[in-house]
Image 1 (cartoon, one colour):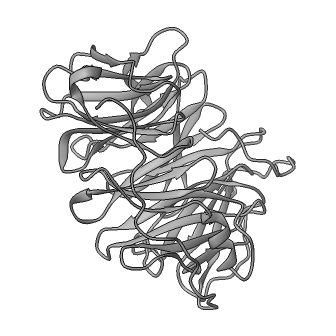
Image 2: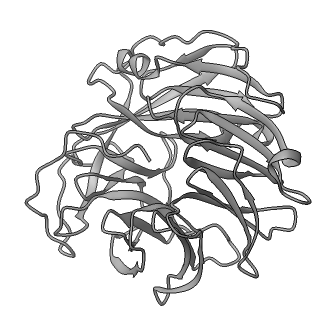
Length: 385
């Protein structure tokens, strides 16, 4: 492909009628993660959903029981901001991976909390995102500054470097589920690039298409039948849905935050945290937050009707600042048999557990495992990625 082209937009965005039927969730538990002036970056579950890993601004990763919030242990080794954590391989359920602005990508055995694997991107490199895949399931791709690096994770040998596809930091790389040799990258330069990683990986021959979002991209993910659709959340709080196979824009919500705010009678949306897609229900939500620490799950329709609806779930009363990560089911469902809807983490340094039934009290309490710090809550938003 010679360059990035703007795709045709199908349909206009709109706000759905305001509703008072949002399901509200009560706090079950609130944990202060540390005494220091730290906050939560990301929460990810172990594959069997017995525990969760939490990355913090102290460059540590702590592990807690998902059901009871009991502290299990922590992994230390990164010397700069941790940008992503995940349990990517169900066949190795105890192995947690992480990447950092210190230029390393590491793996940890969460039974011993020891590092068991590491690759280094080189001097002055920051790794913002990573993904495992490839036709032989041997590739480890990472967004490193404006480059995309590939390793054979079995040998730790770097096998390719794409350095001409993006001009600014690569914030996301994802092998597409069900298409093991297809990789999507997204960048601050506003482009999403699709690569075929089969054979010799290079900028000239392996790039399949380029989608021009037009502004700095924060997060992307997949939805729809056979993961053919791609959602994109930008650093200026716009949302778009694309058909990556057809190289076509399904819908753009340039005024997404305004539309969500209009549908939320209780508050205004200051930022978006993430998006959530239910395969079983084929439904899609954008999760919006307030500077005061509330969250709303806003349904997004992008097919016949293109709109952002009133929040179907509201989480409030747990946080005192900006929320950075959400681990949850879908509105109306629980993650496990303990009645837990989900966990959230934010810039107030708290992990909050939310009950899914209406009988829960809205009172929060601090676990005896950690005490609350005297820090004041931030009102500004941190670095976008």
